[in-house]
Image (tube, chains in turn orange, green, brown, yellow):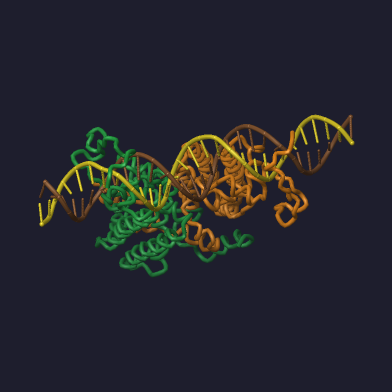
Length: 223
Length: 223
DNA sequence: AGATTACTAGACAGGTGTGTATAGTCTGTG
DNA sequence: CACAGACTATACACACCTGTCTAGTAATCT
């Protein structure tokens, strides 16, 4: 219990200029997770390091091990946090009532662009991370399935037959997933106007048998 | 020039069981880049480390510095390789002649699913990497612009007005970008059949002014 | 055969990251 | 006021990665 000679330096935890939380020097487990989330979004899972987070919170690196068993314990918590926030929000919003399908789809868009309900950048970061970590991959696949199911059921409620409902759900969902960071900054109206335009050379209806045969003729050598 | 006492161990570079290239013990700069590319695709830019690549090539880690000035020199070469391969292939394919727009679009698809012309997984990996490195970001933006320009010009050649050509190019391109690894494994015909289906609740034509106003009413509070 | 060129192995130095041990400080409670 | 529990700082052990230095080997040219 005697003072270690090397530990005799003066501490200044209460120096207000160095305190991240003025008036409350306590750092909670949630603070660590939040700071880690920011790190994950901004830098990627690979760069979620303990020391930089500690610096951001203005506490010692070793404090981390009071709140978390290990580095991977933190990463698990991060994954849990994401699942609870994003997937739950999208599923809930897909179930919201609306007069017509247009309104229902817009509800989904509204959810996705509302940072309080759905952290789009976090979703991106998790998708990145999943490509390198099988555990995350499994969690993401499960969430994707849940979200697609909710969207598909939404289309079915507006009398789309099952296959078409499923297809529309997929396209709606993966159009979101496909956006780049830059595009997510664009005005919502522009993105919405772009979506219903026809793709490829088809002329605005479901492909006829003849057109489908034409496509197959083009692609057959590669299938 | 005298033998260092610690370096007197017997070398066995020509041990066939340890040689990655049987009959040719030489490792070239291309070999390093190729191995690094595999690493980049499978593990992400962050995990392209010299030692594991050396192990895969079954050579010493220090040999690396004969071929490359530094680690970032290798990464530069990787970026250069990607640009030359993928962007060049897509631009070339978009310029190929075809009877109708359907054929032209299928040409693009054929290019993108042909691993000899276009490494889709590499494209993904670069996109990941760009999110963390401004230099790569700039290179990717330049490539995206080149590709979109080529696709847009393709649509214009089939008499689409400029704005619509540009929009179709964007959707066609980002539908590709949005695919997940799993989906890229799906049969081409299914993906092609899925694409022209209408999105959202719109009924198969460009949105009318009334529909556009409806969308704006839904989204106005969030813009 | 000797010299030159192309290429490689191993040791080392320095930086950065995780996890642990230890010696504290602070706050609330009896 | 003394003590217990919550929390934090510093130091250290260890692992891994980059980059440099030195002493080589193997094939080719002269």
